[in-house]
Image (cartoon, rainbow, N blue to C red; front, side, top):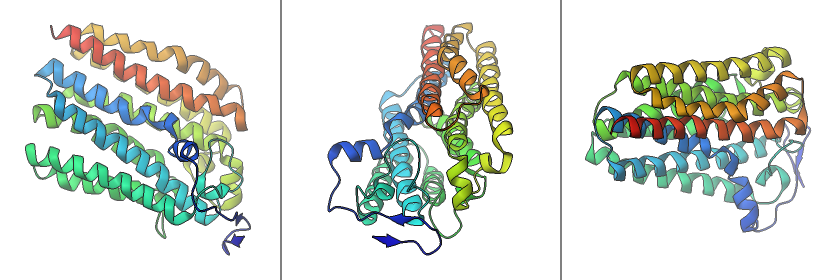
Length: 308
């Protein structure tokens, strides 16, 4: 058993390999709607304002999913070696639980980033090469969320970067590679999707305030405190609603099919505002992820029909 000198938590001895089920859980599949949703929303706008290029949409989805899996493994690795995951509530942490060696988890993270880079290079080569810079920044941001000597996720900037990369960059980028333009509806979609992606992280960090505070991880939730973080979650849901209405008013009223996102967010918001803590907040993450997917899928269907 080896201990991190900077923390009181010790890492458990890792076996040679984790099981496939553990690797899958470590990839945190419940977070994947945050990768699928921006591609759906960005493609919906592309369909409405011009014409979708479906193979480019598929490649954009590969990039987004690979980045999400990569950042999940990278966070597992970085938090695990710092000792901040040893007593975490929620999904399995491969390093913190001792299920997999740190080097293996780090390798999985960079393997996922490699897939994102390859798919991104194809998109850049067939669209514009400055997208390589955007993709490079996305990979750097994914790694330094919790990696490196000064991770920005430990300095209350996680939500900002999630909004930028899994909201603005992902949605606008998806629209751009298909239309080579950045129409106003795409910005509305980016704000709505980004707000719900942030809400997932806010709920996660709300749950982890006790353990993050104890280990010195200064997330936005730790800085704001419990009550304000709960208010922030509700505010982000409201922003997503306003952005959807703006999108529908600027394109097709059928985009309001995305209002289906209220079905999971209403109970999730009630749970957050009720003062739930610990494991009682875990379902909020899943519901918010589903809500983001419904927002984007509803808007996509509405824009597809509206474009006919």
